[in-house]
Amino acid sequence: MLVVHHLNESRSQRILWLLEELGVPYDIRFHQRNAETRLAPPELIDIHPLGKSPVITDNGRVVHESGAIIDYVIRRHGDGRLAPDPASPDYDVYQQWLHYAEGSAMLPLMLFMYVARLGEAGAPLHPRIESEIANHMSFVEGALEGRDYLLGANLSGADIQMSFVPEVLKAFGKLAAYPNMAAWIERLHARPAWKAALDKGGPYALGR
Image 1 (cartoon, helix red, strand yellow):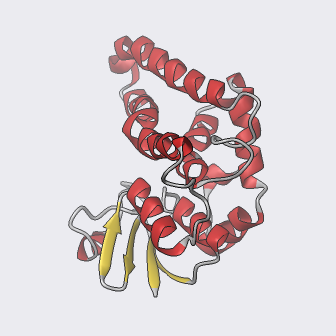
Image 2 (tube, rainbow, N blue to C red; image 1 turned 90 degrees about the vertical axis):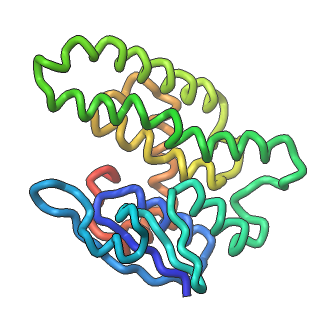
């Protein structure tokens, strides 16, 4: 049985969503953040040395990193769903989105969050961070022009992986500047599988 080690209010919510979209049976092992530090509990280290979520176990395999998990689940359990044919040009675009989400798009958003905690000391960094946010979000906004999903008319694992980006952008009060992204995340959150995953995963502030 595939097991998702699910940390509340985290990126692991999208792994539950992926499994609901595919109808893959799974169990959830719940882990709670420290209320003061917001860090993952030490028990996750027993699953993987980094002590981070998401991480899954599947027939003795341990897989970590959201993009790798999405790729693994779709390849091994997807039966050709939620990913383009590996021989098609769309597959290369799909792989780029899987890596782009955490490799590039989330970096300026994370910097924004951490530097904001510095108060006035972080002020000199804000123009550069805001410029990078605008650069990356404008790129995603343009990619969604005239499309329901990142690869066109159909949902793929790329949309699931990238969904955390507009969720965080919305939490920072910046999503309104990107109407294509705003419509896209509303479309994603309207999917029955997303709602089923939310019911199973518990409170998720970024889903509001």
